[in-house]
Every structure is written in C-alpha cells, then in structure tokens.
Length: 133
Figure (cartoon, rainbow, N blue to C red):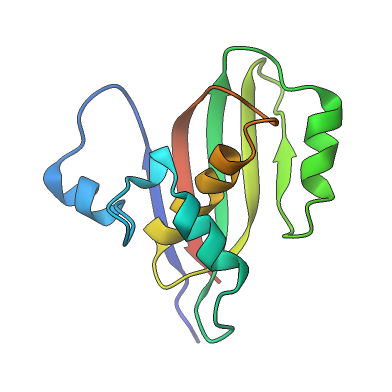
C-alpha cells in the first residue's frame, strides 16, 4: 500500500524556522505562501510522470470576491475551485497540480492567484496543504 505524503503549514505573523522556510521554498526560490507564477506556468505542461498533489490554500482578502469571479475559477479548466467557507473574507483555493515537490505545488496554486489579479487583488495566505495522491 502506498503511503500518502501530507505537507501542511498554518502560517502566522511569527517567523518560520529555517527548516520550515526551506521546506516551503519552491525551485524558483519563492516561499509557497507568496506564490510563484513560473511554478504555475510549468505545472500547466507538467510531465504526467510527476506526482499529483491535492492542494488547498486558505487565504483572506480585504474585500469580498464577487460571486462571478468565484464561478470563473471553476471554468478555468485546471480543476481548481475557489470557495468561501462560512467565514467572511476567508476563501479556499483547491485543486490538483503535478509537480515534483509539495512546496512547488502550493507555490503554483498561489501563483494562479498572482497571475489572475482580476480574481483577487490583495490576499494573505493563512494555511497551506499539499497531499501527494
């Protein structure tokens, strides 16, 4: 039986340890919580032999995301979903990404938000999770 690898972090204003920073740094030297557009772009044409990660990114915004923008993410074609739990101004972006590392998968997911600023202009990532399926 294959063991599922789960990598998760609850992020706060407190600094992370050097080991945690290394764990969550993508190959482009970006911390996953800040996202990486090159990781996002690379994941679009990823080798099917790379691991498939189920990724979830919780983030907060200053302003509500319009319902239409939430629906547009569903039509994106990369099996991403953007939902709002019952808490105001808290959102979860989830989906599947093929990358070598969990940090790279999360950086790609947050990179999607960076590249698509019309969905959300300002956001703060509060929790990240990547599960190798």
